Image (cartoon, rainbow, N blue to C red; front, top):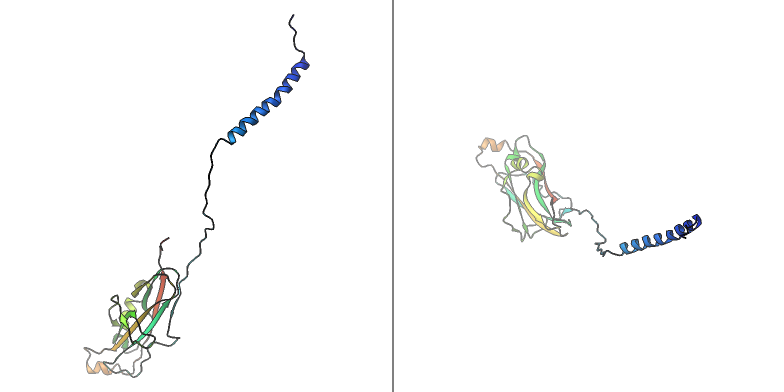
Length: 209
């Protein structure tokens, strides 16, 4: 005669089966978590810092040109060394600022020529050698209109971004009265005009790297 297991025996069997199921499930998790290959690599210490642009000259705060008692046809030249302290590439441009015209229009008859090159120093152009890339001479009045800010500046000098780069600029002026009558020339007596020459450096928009 077949015996039917008691309810107590059923409970014992069920309880005994539970640890086995848990162990089996744990075994599957352990095997699954160890079934993949992994590898990593990293580039550590990444950082970004902004560059700087610095521009100086050797005039020690002294005006490059202070000429008194001009006479028609008189001319002269002075040099100035501009040095870049920037650590990023950029471009230096030259322009006229703060023009203070004379009542007689003297600014229309002072022709100014700015050349860039090497050699020379402030006030002394001995050894100056110009580069081919220079802007044409023009009256101060014209320069103030044509080269009035960085966007319209001339005599471009491309810097490499190495602090200490320098470029010499030679400014040559002439009191030009060509084509004027004697009466017009006489009307320029006692006139005075002033301006600022500005050398501005701006970094490149999209440097390499």
